[in-house]
Image (cartoon, rainbow, N blue to C red; front, side, top):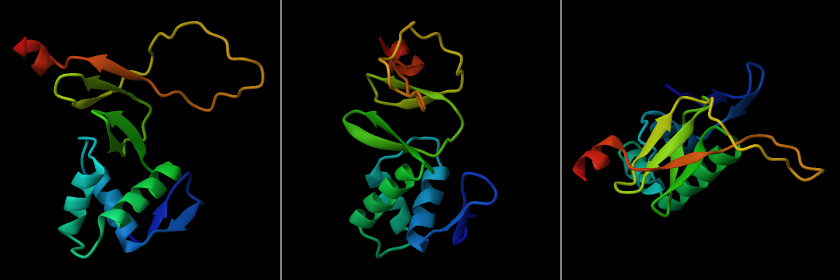
Length: 137
């Protein structure tokens, strides 16, 4: 369970989290389903009945900024992911399901960045049909 102090980016770095932010993070970490802000809001309200949707959005945005969680865009909505391990996503174009792809050794096209750019990370999503939707065709 997450307490008022949450460790990030190594053992010496600590930040204070509000009760609301800690609960939002705990809820996102409790699922691998890549929830939307609305889903997180309804789950957090079971624990903190007076929390507003705006507070949930603000805390989700701050958690993304601090790299405690990441965003995934699917079906025109932002979804949130607490899996901090290096991975990709497969997004089903039929059911809009988001699935973690743990394999990180993906071949990429050979390309060169223009001079002066520094790559700090790569985000890649795969799109297509998941096994359940493919079986329905």
